[in-house]
Amino acid sequence: MLEDGVYLMSHSLGPQPRAVRESMGDYLGRWQASLAKNAWKYDWWPLARRAGDLVARILGAPPGTVEMQPSATVAVAVVASCFDFARGPRRKVVTTALDFPSMGYVWDAQRRLGAEVLVVPSDDGVHVSMDRLLAAIDEETCLVAVSHVSYRSSFRVDAAALVAAAHEKGAHVLLDVYQSAGAMPLDAARLGVDFLVGGTIKWLCGGPASGYLYVRRDLIERLEPRLTGWIAHAEPFDFLYDAMEYDDSIRRFAHGTPNVPGLYSALPGLEILAQLDHGEVRAESLRRTDWMVEQARERGWRLTCPLAGERRGGAVMIDLPEPKRLVAELERRRIAVDERPGVGLRISPHFFNTDAEVAEALEALAELV
Image (tube, rainbow, N blue to C red):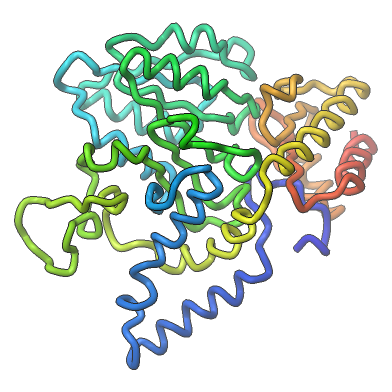
């Protein structure tokens, strides 16, 4: 894919690793050979744990703390199902206006179960005031559930300050790291965050295959999600039709049959990303995106992302007239970016890009403008 043009869309869909075709062939071959060797028992049952442990390495989390999910939305719903919003003093969920809409829909649905959802606004559509966000957390807060990096503006919250403030008030923290995992170093264990959710489609080069859920080690055996299923049972292959007996491991946050072909398609990207030095990835990303911001400002283009690198994720947003036309024209030149309403163009160099590619994209955009 990368030989065929300039790919600057990792915030939306990562490029396909060459090994994906071989991995999908392996899936089909093992399925075909299951007459001689039960593919489910010997090959597919441990697959989710293998993928989850690769994700854990990328998140800076210990093995056995990540369960693969159908999507990040389902992962959020699993976390929500661990809490009883109808009883007790902690019924409040704090989110922000810059979170991905799907997550907002999940939390809005919890209102029917007694949750009080507080959405911290953004005054400019780019930033959220950290002071306002931290002030929203109190002794009635059950969960603070926000995007680590916003899909809309690339705004990055101060995760350490957020976790510290929430834990001081006795609240849990869920970070949506869909737009940060793979693009910057994460240290879930050191941060002490309670939950992380994300997926493989973007910076992890896994395609639209799988979501994931990280749960802090000491919380795993204490929580019992209502969104559950046979895979979460301590003895799933006993097929017991009694009261649920949760597994002691991270598998208790699973539910139905896993997406086996999706996992096969995600593994090559996860294996690549798990080998990278994410400090170096972040340093290169900052250098390139800082230069992109500088170039945009020199040309008088309106930026809809933070100007300061420490508050910005891996993507740069540029609001120009006729964004759909610009995306289509760039596509014809084999330059892949995308756009969002009210945001403009979204452009994201990743570890596989070169400085020359970023320069080519900006020069082409300037010519079109």
